[in-house]
Length: 223
Image 1 (cartoon, rainbow, N blue to C red):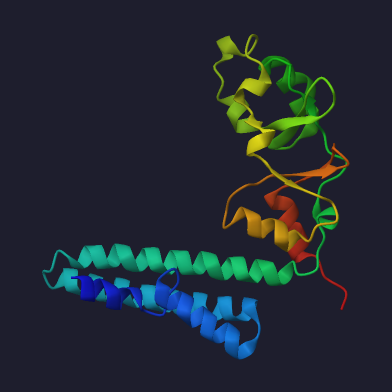
Image 2: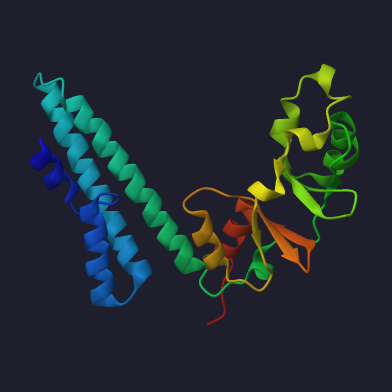
């Protein structure tokens, strides 16, 4: 069983170790990390689909264990596809600074307001799904998502403070306006940590959401 797992782990498919080896070899040969990541991602997708197909054929022929191979194959293919998209995103955002991508000026609300007042006085005119919060001194204290506020029972909205349902600033990702966007995204990892609060001299300079990143990725770059 250990030998079987070892051989399986060496398949050239991300996120398996064999996929990491393939990535390293391609990176060493081409000198282009993003290109190597895309190629390793395509390899992982292919291997995952093959595993899922083999598992399905085995299940059709009466081997119940084939379903596990289908699940594993789909997991490998999905993870490899995510890593491939991540590499393509990094290439599209190469050289882009945080200040070029962030939304500014940004609408922020006081964190001491009740949920009811925040929805009517701040969220209604902001029109965003995520809003930063400021404390009494004007410093960022966190972010709040509109769907989180909408989930608060109506009977509690007049007494519950918006900061009590927010993500605190210690749990947020912070960035400086002159940082490279790719270096900030590397700190996040795949699919997490958004939105990003952009701090300029201790004050909130802007906010960076998934929409901002996608907009920057689609914007044409000068050569």
